[in-house]
Amino acid sequence: MSPLRVVLYVILMIVSVIVTGLVLMQEGKQQGLGAISGAAETYWGKNKGRSMEGKLVKWTAILVIVMIVLSAVLNITRF
Image (cartoon, rainbow, N blue to C red; front, side):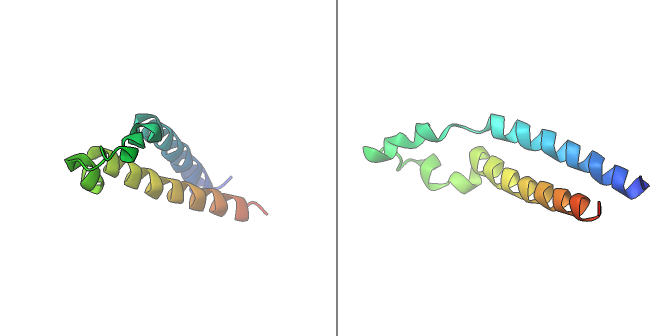
């Protein structure tokens, strides 16, 4: 096994653990049910992208893409 392959596997494992932590830190989507009664029109509802929750969602998406790309690269080079 080449050293580059080992490094990519280690990075994949680290990214996987971080994604798991980020997903567990996010709020459940059921808390957004206040939109039915109009309660979602708060400061945090309008500025969700700038809040901590918005940042968690953004970083989760970025790291999931990195994880998929790493998995594909490691699988393609196997053959």
